Amino acid sequence: MMITNVATEQNPALVTNQVADIHADSTQDLAAVLPTVVAQAMKTHKWVTVIGASREQIESLADQGISRGRIRWIQGKDNDQREWATEQAILAGTSGVVISWLEGVSPRTQQRIKMASRVSQTTSFIFSELTLRTPLH
Image (cartoon, rainbow, N blue to C red; front, side, top):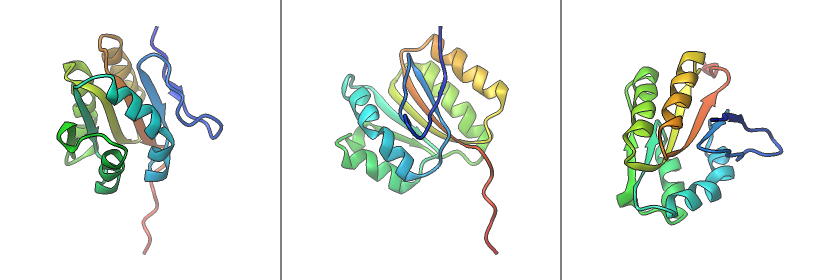
C-alpha cells in the first residue's frame, strides 16, 4: 500500500514507502529533507530528477555532494508540463530520486502520482504550494 504523507512542522521529511508529499515551496524546506534526498540518491547511480526547481535548489543538491552530472533538471513551461514530467520520471525507472515543485496539485494528479509510485522503485518528493502567492505591486 502506498502512503502519501503530508509533512508537518514536527516532521517535514516523513518518507514512508516511496512518496513524500510535502507542502512547501522554499529552499529552506528543501534543506529540511536534503539528508533524506542525499541518502536515497547515494543508494543508486541513477538520475536525480528535479522538476520545477530554482537554480538555488539545484545548487543545494550539488553542495550536498550529488554530482551535477547525475542531476536531470526539468523546468517545464507550465504546471501541466511539470505534473506530466513528474509522473513520467517516476514511471520511467531511470531516476533514483524525483523531486518536483508543483502548484495546486489536484486530487486527480495526486492519484496519478500515487499510482505511478506503486509500480516504481523511485523515491519521490513532491513540493506543492498550498495557496498561490499574492503578487506584490
